[in-house]
Structure formats: structure tokens, C-alpha cells
Length: 487
Image (tube, rainbow, N blue to C red):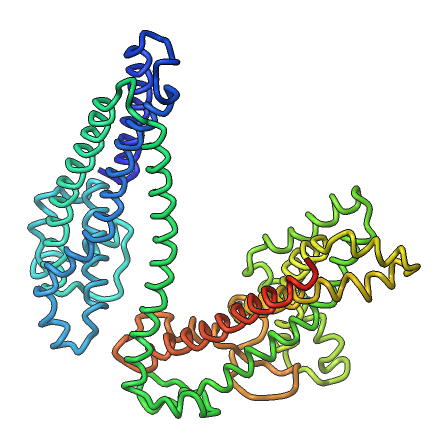
């Protein structure tokens, strides 16, 4: 049974528990709510929460652990093949999952029966053609060990799915019944419900923290593995980026960092003045009617997908720059993909980040500072320059640093607008690339995670993570250190 239907059934049990719990509480006092410790709804929520929270918690944990445990169970069937073919075990297991999904699709579409899927053999059946008919394309023929592991994967997944459904529904029904049994006039339902909600909020916060820890650890472990295969000194100090999956790669990060910082600098040179001036106008000069229209219009830029910005850079900004700086103009630009193209478009994308944050910060400056300046005879422009902006400067600097972090992590605009050349040039009309673009290129296709050419993506990601984390910490430090001077 799909998880979606399980969730719907559990929610249905919870709704029934809420209705019955509320009704049972009212019946216990013959309709006189004053004899209840808590409002009737709290008794209903108590039954509903005890029916839904443990069940959905078990479902989430089960869905996370089940594939891992099943993969471990079938690893022995494919490990010898992976060693014989000198392939990464993870890639072989990915083939197993793909074949298992294809068999499930074939059975669901009626192309195969359940027994036929279990009895397939690479010796007598064209597995690749069968799965292609079901809509699952494979890059190579299915090996016997992979097929056996996929069939075992399907069997274990089916058995685990049945057990999961039974346990989740049993826990949901049992929790709801337990909540209904607790209903009595002196039961402190409100306290229990509030403690339960607090536990849910704490759990959500822990999930967010653990997710961050998991991301960092995955980067750290793979980065350590990369540095076991490739010298750290060559990675950090070499000026040549020339990966080759056949061997003999030069994986120096300096050209990528230079391109990243160069494009980000141009983007900030575009976004900071425009965004800051827009924020000053909206907060100090614009009427309420103009502000109600202009502010949402500027913030629409933040909602545009970055792939659209990339297409805008490739199809519009690049050709326009070529007309001015290309062969028909000044002759400085050889192609539409260049640092300047990506920087200009990225700067447009960052305008709402700088504008919105700066606007909120400027509006947070106490009105008493404005009134004091006007009382001393200063004009509005003098008040803005000498009072408001200095007071808001720490927050504005923080907003700029956050925008810089966003620029450093951008990918699609760089891929489509800046080109793919890893070089260290001062000419902004030359094609260059960034760290994020090379992370994508190194992990595109069937990457062999036992090679430094694939693992270098994690080292690049870790370097980028440290840089952006440093900028964010610096922004928070500046805001917190100087904010209290004007409160």
C-alpha cells in the first residue's frame, strides 16, 4: 500500500478519535462543560494526537530505514560482481534498485505477473527489452547477479511493506483507543495536549539540526576520502583545473574560486547600489500607495527560478553585450558567455535580497532619531545620509554579506551565462566558471565514487560550505555587535 494512503487512513482514524473524544468528554458530565478540567476540544485533540503522532513517526522511520536494511540484505548477491568488474558497490546497488523498480512497473502495467517477475532469468529472457516496454530504460544488459538481487529486493520490500502497514495502523488505532480511555472529567487534557505539541515542535527543531549535521558529515567523510587519493596541497594551491577520468588529472581549486569570487563581485556591484537606493526610496520617500505596489513588484524577482535567469543571460544579456563589446563594437568580447554576462544577471537576481532586507532594517531605525535630526534643522536627505544610514549600517552590511553568500552558491546562471572555462583572468568579458558549476559537471553521469575525479565534487562543496558559512557568521556578528548602539 502506498504511503499516501496509509497517511490518509491514519488521519481518518485521528479525526474519528477527535470526534469521539470530544463527545465522550461531554457525555461524561452530561453536557455541563463546567465540570470538565479542560475544554471538550482538548479531550478530542488528546485522542487524535495519540493516534496520529506515534503512527506517522513510525512510518517515517520505517520508510527511511527499510531501503537501507534491504540493500544490506542483498549486498552479498552483488558484491562479488562489483569486485570482478571493479565497479563501485553503490553503483551496482543503484542498478539493483532500478531493475527492481522496473519489475514493479511491469507487474503494475500487466506486462508480467508476480510469479513471472520472480522467475525471470537472464539466460532465457531479454530483461532489458521487457523493462524498456514498462518505461524503464537501462544503459546496459542486466547481469544475473543484479537480476537475482533485484528479485530478492522486491520480495523483501513487499514483505516489509505488509508488516509496516499492519504496525502503523495498529499503533494508530491503539493510540486512539488509549486516548479515549483517558477521557474523564478530572483528566488534565489541556496540559497533556500542550506538552505533546511542545514535543512535536522540539522534534521538528531536532530534525532540522540533524539534517544539517548529516549534510556536513556527508561532505566531511567524502572530502577526507578525496584527500586520501589526491594531495591537499595540489588541490588548494594549483592554478590548473584539468580533470580526466582516465587518470592524470590536475584538480586545482584556485581557478574555480577566482571565477566564483569575480562573478559574485560583479553581481554585488550591480545589486548593492540598486537594492540600497530602492530600499531608501521605499522606506523614506515613497507614499504608502506607491510602496504597496513597488515593494511586491521588486520581490517578484526573488521568486523567479534561477533557470529562467540563466536563459535570460544566455538569450538576451549575452547577445546585447556582444553588440556593444563584441566584434561589432569594441572588440573586447569573443562570445556571449562571459563573467560580465553572468554577473549582471546574478546582480539582478540579488536586487530583492538587498532591497527587502535593507528596507526592513531602515524601517527598524527608531523614529526618535529622525525626529531629533529634523528638530536640529537637518533636511530629509541630510537625515538619511548622516543619521538613518549610519544607524542601519550594521544590518545593511549583514544583508550584503547574505546576498554574497547567495551569489557564491548560484549554479544555473553561471552554467548558462559564464561558460565552462576554468581560468584566472582579469578580463570580465572572458568566459570563466565557478565552483558550483564544476560540482555539477563532475557528478553528471555515472560517476565512479572511488575516483578522485568524482570525489573532488565533495571537496569543492566543502570548501564552498566553509566560505558561505564564514560569510553568514560574519554577517550575524556584525549585526549583533553594533545593533544595540542605536536601540
